[in-house]
Image (cartoon, rainbow, N blue to C red; front, side, top):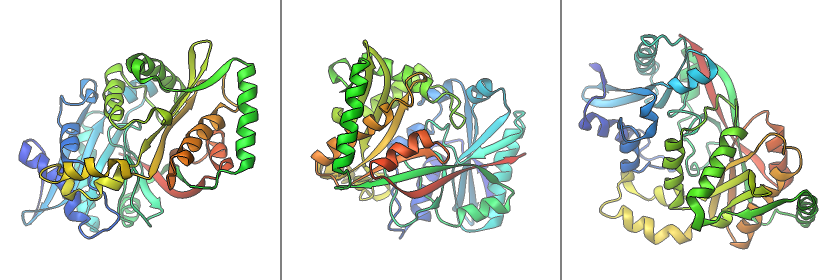
Length: 373
C-alpha cells in the first residue's frame, strides 16, 4: 500500500536525503550529495532562502519503502520581481512509475495552489541561483560539480503529466590541448584593446575576499537581470554561497574585469569535486569519506566554469571571451584534462559563441519545464 507523507521530522528528512542513493544504486554515473550539506539545505532556518520563502517536502512510500520524493517551492522573491504566481518543484526523484510520479506532483501542486500559485516550473532547487534543470541529453558520464543528474525516464514521466518545455540549458565541454595558437593571439589582441579603454583583467584578491565579494555580488545581480527567471540574491544568500565556494576556490580561476577600480565583469570556475564525491558512499563524510575528500583534493583534473557575467554597457567588447580565455589559460597551465562551461541558455549567443570560439563543444542539455495548475 502506498502512503504519501509531508516531511516533518529528522527521520523523514534523512529518508528524503538518502532516497537517491537507493534509486541510483548500481548507476556508475550517480554522484551522491554530501548528507550534511543536503540536510542543512533542506532544514528551515539553516539557509537564508527561508527568510523570504518556503518549501514543503513530500515522500512517497510503498510497503514501508520510499519510492519517490519531491519539494514544492514557493519563492516569494521571484513572484515579487516578476509580478507572477509561479510555483516551483525541485529535489524530484522517483521510480519509473507514472502513478507514483503523478501522486507526488498532485501533492506538490495542491500545496502550491493553496498559496494562490497558478503555474509550476522545474526542476529548480529553490531558485535558478541553485541547482536546476532536467538532464535530457548526455547521459554518458557523471555530472560535474553542482550540476543535476537524473534517469532518462524522467522526461517522459513529466511530459505524460502535461509538462512542456520552458527553456533548454546547455553544457559545453572543453578538453586539454584544444586552445589553439590562433585563440591565444586573438585573446591577446582583444585584451590590448580593452587595456586602451582602461579595462584590465585580474584574479581575485583573497586578502580582500569580503570586499571583492561585495563588488562581484553587484555585478552578478545586474548581469543576470531577468535571465531565465533570475532573482537577485539577498546579501545573506550571496555570502552563504561565497563562503561555501571559498573553501575550494583557486584565485587563478576567479577572474575580474575592472575599469577605474570598478568591477564590470567576472568569471568563476571551481574544481570538479564530483570526482571525489562519487567515491564517498551515501555522501557520508564519516568514517572514511573525509579521508577520501582530503586525500584526493589535489588529484582533481577537471573544472566547471560556473559563472560568467558582464554588466550592461560593457558587453560585446570581447570581455566575455577574454574572461573565458584567462580561465582556460590557467587550466592548460595546470595540465588539467577537461573543463565544463555550464549552464548557458540555449539561445544566448553572446555567451555561447565565445565558448565555442575557444574550443568548447556542446555535449549536454538540460530542460526547465512548466505547467499550468
